[in-house]
Length: 210
Length: 85
Image (cartoon, rainbow over all chains, first blue to last red; front, side):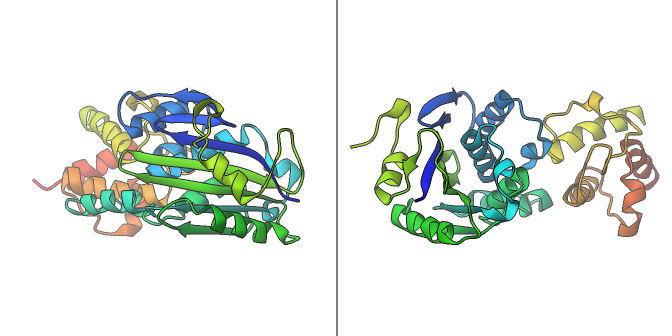
């Protein structure tokens, strides 16, 4: 049996852990929100400021998801997988980089012009060295994500997997991340496509779209 | 030189997205890479772009980079010696 032990969302400039609002800041731009949410967490990680919006969202989402749970205390780095997906790839940063080429191309932007850089940033932060994949699809494909995570988790090698959706385009953003493990923690849910759909659609304070 | 160093600190913070730092947090002689400010190879490329963009200086020999980008003061000295008239 595989369990969903934790989940987190970032939507409409608000961060949720297990469906509970952690912080919200609708003043200013998305960039402003990403900085204020990070600084509110009190984490010392200077590299965050250099990340593009996608990596910042993935980083913040994972910090919310794990919330002081150190996966490396329970698993070897090779036993933790990371499976992500989104709709816009790295288009948001691609366009920003394209703009920079009109004057002087920015190397710091260029290094983020791949969708799976967000996965790299999450892996570096959390010392994850297991299986990883990144899918691009028009919307969060619950069945594909469920089936792929099940396949990865059925191998003996993988004991835990962070999976979900990290999408950004301009000011629009949508993050849903969840942690699956073979062991059951408090408030664990069964990893099924139906359950995933419910969690993805979870709105504020535990309400679910009908 | 003092004004140039102050300008450089502001420009480095802006160009390298070091938003957690203020100009006064960067020492004139503080090493910029590894144990100092912790900059990396991508930051080195951004510094090359910064020199070109703000001071119209193209690095003639990339091998001189480590010496030029040792600190804010060494960058300022290089600009002073090489800025086109």
